[in-house]
Image 1 (cartoon, helix red, strand yellow):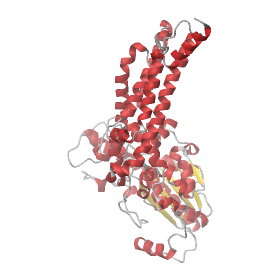
Image 2 (cartoon, helix red, strand yellow):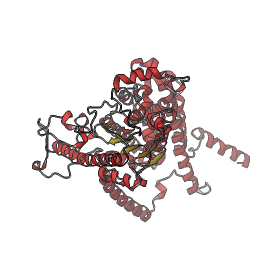
Image 3 (tube, helix red, strand yellow):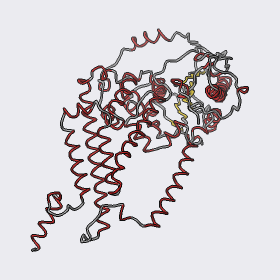
Image 4 (cartoon, helix red, strand yellow):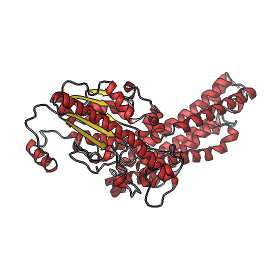
Length: 529
């Protein structure tokens, strides 16, 4: 055979290996390339996409199978199916766990945040001990696997077989397998993006009721279960980045001042002592996951704490309506600082720090800053947590002090509210000459509330009056125990404000609010750790 004919035959086998009279080179490569191209081609058929939208996880299952085919040795191809099913099941469990806690499914924003900083998920679920245990076991397994691998040196079974006549067979084999993985990932990315865009664009015509209700958590949960976890994440990319309301584009003079004043007076009717010339100091105290259990539950004995009891200085006290349950503190923070209902912004309203904050033009905080107030936020998470520093700067705070600056642990379960306030004071709080507005964050009562400090029921300060397990009553008392620390923090702040008033004559306003109930008590969801 001449050199030219040999080269032509080789090229033909590379291009259409299955049609060659000889066995094709790299059959796995051609299988994966053909299947990936076919799956991507289906995203151009609206009829196909419409039908697939009523069957969850079709695309994610197919691409997971192809990914495992690209990774596993040929003799283990059959494992691709159960492994893909297992991954989808794990994703579903995670999604349902978030739904049970926050009443919201996993979105692209969640995935991006957790990938960038996995400790956020660990902190939110309070699973540091579990992480340490799993990490130790995983490390041991990796060491054993590596030892067996290098001892047996069976690398030839882990890559695509390469004909002996090929130059640099090992390098070629690894390159081909790597190319297969890249093909699967690239086609999956492109296909899921087109699928997510199709769902977002056509949902209004396919299911108008569901589309109009997407600002409600229940509708998002319903759609995520209908599409599948990965497919819903793809949808959420477009739902989050597309402007779903004309509010953002609104321009003009805004609402007349006299109209806003008239409306405000319907809700605020507190007489003002005009003889006082000094502007008041103002503190917004964020009581994390705090609520009055006396009002929420039927208890065997009342729990009296300063945190939720009227004092001589108290002007108003009562329940607060919030738009999140079990988590999502940033939503309530946004509503407190701006006075705007987050539901106005639909899907984006659940992630205010990231999507809404950059568009904020004016707030109560920025108004006070223009009036000469020193505006400072003392926060119990890192400055890049859910885009919080940028958000607070947009809300009008000139200074942002995060957990690192306060010297707090990055493990939320180790943060104690009374110590948080002490750290804020050590870092300059309540040392201003002029009027100030502070946002003081706390963390201690964040869920979960595992039973750690009560060995028997005789130690409980209160219990559920109706029938409840020891674990449920113990979690209630763990909440009350932590609330005592939060109450001490409130008393410390109140003491500092009264001290300044006595020294300078400057009055004060102390606003204390709970952002949501802890997820330990939502939907009667109890967890044992």
